[in-house]
Length: 75
Image (cartoon, rainbow, N blue to C red; front, side, top):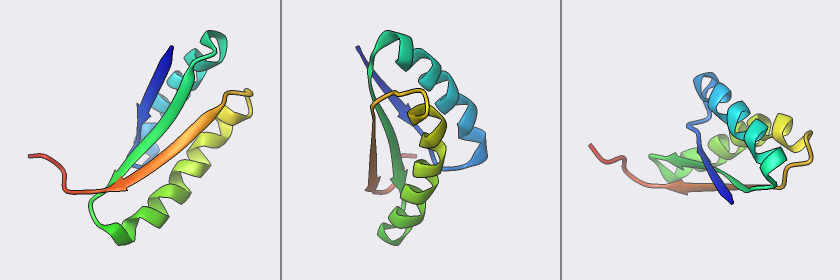
């Protein structure tokens, strides 16, 4: 099983990340935390935010990949 959790790095996304992490552990799911920055220069700060948000999941021994890309949102 695979779980994809999308986050914009804000506090509002933390509950979705926590729920995904709670499911990922018992399911032994491959888990990816994914973020998209509108501008390339925002990728670094977004990655830092996602790394912080990933800490509770990793503390449950869930293997977690973090992916960050830049691009325009679709309207």
